[in-house]
Amino acid sequence: MESKIDRFRVLTAAWLGLVALTLVGLGLGEWFREARWLPLLVAAIIWLKGALVARHFIESHLAHPFIARLLQGFIAIAPTALVLTAFFGDTLARWATL
Amino acid sequence: MVAAVLHNSPEIPVADGRRIPGNKGIWVGITCEIVEFVVLFTVYFVARAHFPDAFHEGAQRLSVISGTVITLLMVTSSYFIACSVNAIRLDRHRAAVAWLVAGLVIALGYPLAKFLEISWNLAHGIDGSSGIFFTVYYYLTFNHLVHATWGILGILWVLARLLFHGYSAGDYTGLEALASYWHATDIIWLIIFPLFYVLA
Image (tube, rainbow over the protein chains, first blue to last red):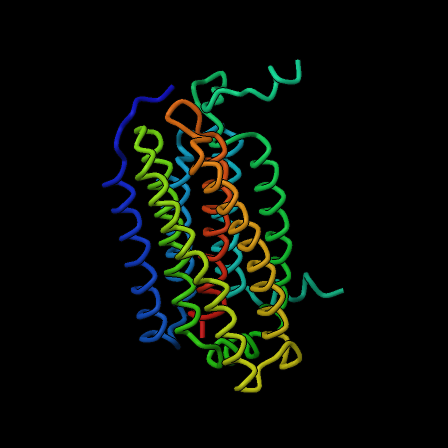
């Protein structure tokens, strides 16, 4: 049984972080719309937001290893695919052509 | 025998001291949900690799305000529900009810925002046949809406149980299971949002 610790401040900080990352991501997306490195930045923000929710809302670091790995893996898939598509899109399209 | 199996303790410890948030059943469901969306994201990235221009131009036609509002609704309802779990752990029943009601009210804003977004889309000539980007956008976001609707129904059920003192500091498995499902659905939206609304 875990100790009864009030996590309100941690949860609030995580929520504020998620809101800030959402707004910052939008602003950067608008300002650097044509930048070649934008997908890298967006991928980093996706990963960071997913990790925030997993760690502070689900408490994945205290969860069963399967759950922790499932979440870690899922959070990493889309950012990785985004970077691969942005920089190796033609190769990916060739591999995925029937 | 059956009663003994069903009467789990709120914390399910495993060998190395780690635990299962909620219960095993919800994690079977969450795993299936994740597998489903991995397949859907695979289709998204394959389509994006084949038609980069369509994805670049398509994102500029969507309502960024709608996507942002839905994102803020999702993270805020997730936060409120996490606070409800925190409150019940501290044996603050009334606070747990209040946080869950707040989470429900905010969560209900999602289908409303989506309805307004679809109306806006249709008014601007955007439907499922408007091109590859919009086909992928509609099936991915509608799928997420379906999953969120199940979550909202789950919130209603858990709220009813919580109102009748079905959960306490000694047993809050159901509330935490619902919270885990909603947080996982939140993570999926946090991936969908930049893929369709930010990468314009």
